[in-house]
Length: 147
Image (cartoon, rainbow, N blue to C red; front, side):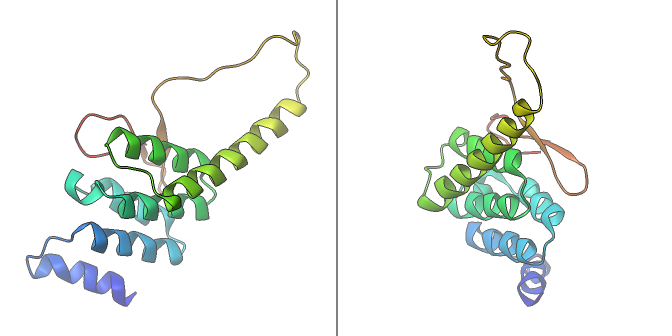
């Protein structure tokens, strides 16, 4: 809570938080179990604040902690689209999410009997994620903030 209070005080003192400060605030919200606020903060960041592997790693770790596998993977894709190089932390979060998502897809497919063993469902297109407050955010790359 102290870290979040200090983060909030930055605006009162006309100090723009940098990527490190934003990353710390996202991590603090995640540790408090407030995934919705962590994603809302990430979504509100400017491109400059967000365009850091540290900020993306914090957001991805928050999504992973909340078991939001699709959100984690969407954030990874957005990070790559923003030109941010992956790190061991972002790759690890993406791998964990992909493994859990694959398990969930496997569990879903094992409960259905396919009519044609050669038919496979493929889902392509833009990804969105829903934060803890049920607000939908796009991860499309446009050179602007993620909303």
